[in-house]
Image 1: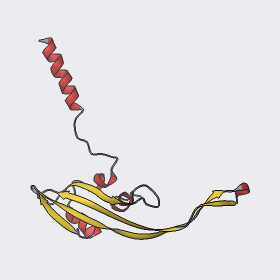
Image 2 (image 1 turned 135 degrees about the vertical axis):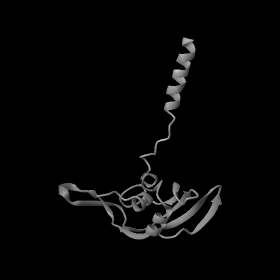
Image 3 (image 1 turned 90 degrees about the vertical axis):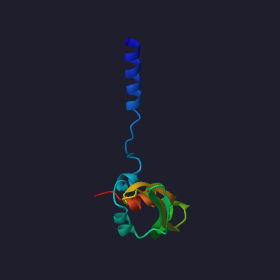
Image 4 (image 1 turned 30 degrees about the horizontal axis):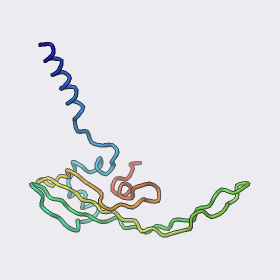
Length: 135
């Protein structure tokens, strides 16, 4: 009898660790999952396509077009002077594409970036554009 109780308790503890918790590592999901897709599309523009999947819909959205000029980078020289150029100035064309899965009541269940470009200030322009840090 004790063996069964111990086994059941161990199984319960193991299963307790399997709960789904929203990931803090993805700011886009943290910002938009559970909200209405209408709010998203009103803020960022309409989707470019959609397809039915089960009882929900998957929308493909593209936007956030922005052209930025990135200045040249220089090594630090002696006495605080500008050293040798290590990177040329360039123009970067930023954009984002995402697939947004909604339930039958138009609530966002999942949002996944399909095409993302590193931003000037970080690794993801989509995260910077779709889930800006609140100041």
